[in-house]
Amino acid sequence: MKQNSRIFLVLTLLFFLIPLLVLAAQSFSAPWRFQTGAGLDWELRSYEQLLQNPMLWKATFTSIWIGFVVLLLNVLIGVFTGKALTTVPFKGKPWVEALLLSPILIPVLAIAMGLHIFMIRAGLADTALGVIIIHLVPTVPYSIKVFHNSYQQIGRAMLEQPHILGSGFFRQLFTVELPLLKPALRSVTFLTIVISLSQYAITAVIGGGRVLTLPLVFFPFLENADASVMSAFSLWFAAIPVWMYILVEAAILLLPYSRLPWRNKR
Image 1: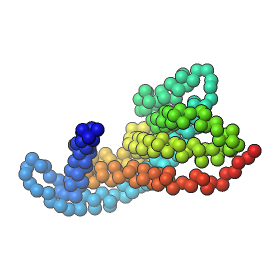
Image 2 (image 1 turned 180 degrees about the horizontal axis):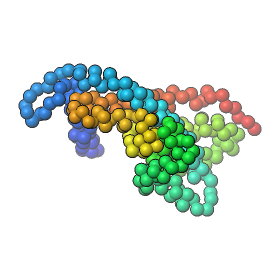
Image 3 (image 1 turned 180 degrees about the vertical axis):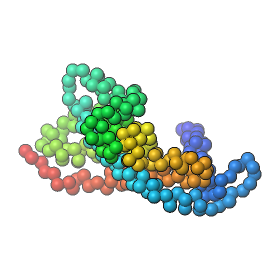
Image 4 (image 1 turned 45 degrees about the vertical axis):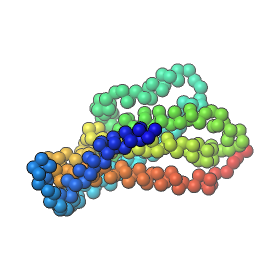
């Protein structure tokens, strides 16, 4: 056990902490190359240049609220679909599960190109709503799979007990199921936020450049070939999902399940 812990610590240092420290050092200094032997020239120029860009703030707020909406829809779809796949017996269930997970196997850009024609006709192209819908394609299958596995671990017997005792639908959902689904909620939150924030191609196709998110701002910064500015932007980009995850985690921990105003109805 100790050896495994040491291996995990070494891998964490090599693949996460050390690159992150190097990135942070580069963001607070002038561009440098370690092979030259020159020291770091500490400065805040990269962050000043980064924060003065109005596109950055607009893209940040757009990415955050789109990410939260996509997360909420993923939780709603994942919870009810995962519960239905666990508790409702019907023929062809394996085929339905395979169909729900199929977007993972198909290149999402191919799906986006096909949906783009539909969204143009439906008036959803070049809109935030269209971007939200297309972000559900690569995220919902994971959410359904995570919640389905969690409901299977809970078991049908546990899910039937509150109903037998007279608990209403919402009371059972908020006081029994969601507390037991906390690990699944955390997993879905992490996956959904990271996947949604990192989408560039499908956002550009469906949003048409009018829905500005952080990945769309990344490439103009990349063109200036300034390593310090790129490092600062990378840290900014990486901090957004971390803070979003912290907010959701606080909501999960502080949500007063037992005080919700739902009452049993017999």
